[in-house]
Length: 283
Ligand code: CA
Image 1: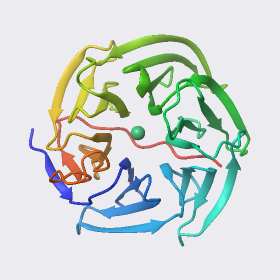
Image 2: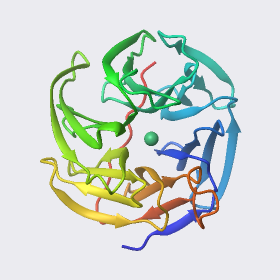
Image 3: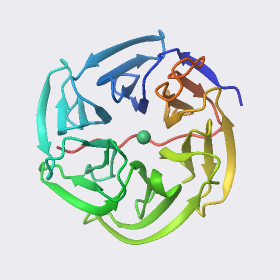
Image 4: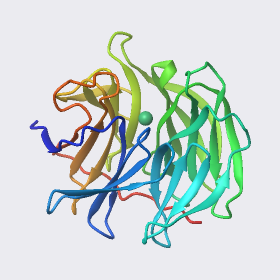
């Protein structure tokens, strides 16, 4: 598979490639730089909006614009780049911040935290409902990362990077609640950490391996199906984009290896399968 560098972005920690079919653009973030990027595949142009604090992830809003998972909580970014508060967190530890985030098929936003020192078990996973009420859904998390649902919404996939594994939860789509948890897959210790993930139209998972220079495709039973090798080591996340959702965009970071060529770049590969349209936040 041919991996193409589409933007030599030199991002500190590039993350959250999010296709926006409304505009035909790819949103992505640079977490510690506090930037929300807007990449236009047709022209190769990229612009960035400075948010002024860590941006863990962004998601589409059904009314237009984006919702952001920040250090201080959740905020909206409207189409004129105005930021407004959506919800704070239920804790006041300034060294805890929101990390990866994703909307479920009913427009609820799920996002988890991580502490700057990666302290074990102090982070949590939250659900922000369209009425902007925040619910703490899971405790004992260390590095909350990749999250997505099976195509029928009955399973929730979740990577706490510190576990070197991806777990699957039974998911009650009507109530937005988590049920039984089981281990779906584990990465080899020496390979790297599970980071961002996305589920494709066939129900297979694509998982970025941070430190491993790979994106791996796993079957719904956890079996390894395919491996894409990236030309950079610190691969952070992946998401399908393009008009046909057949292009897999991959983000990376240069924080751990500042001088490495292409580190922090945005990449694209056509893996022969398609993604699913992104769910939008209903609030
Ligand atoms: Ca991540």
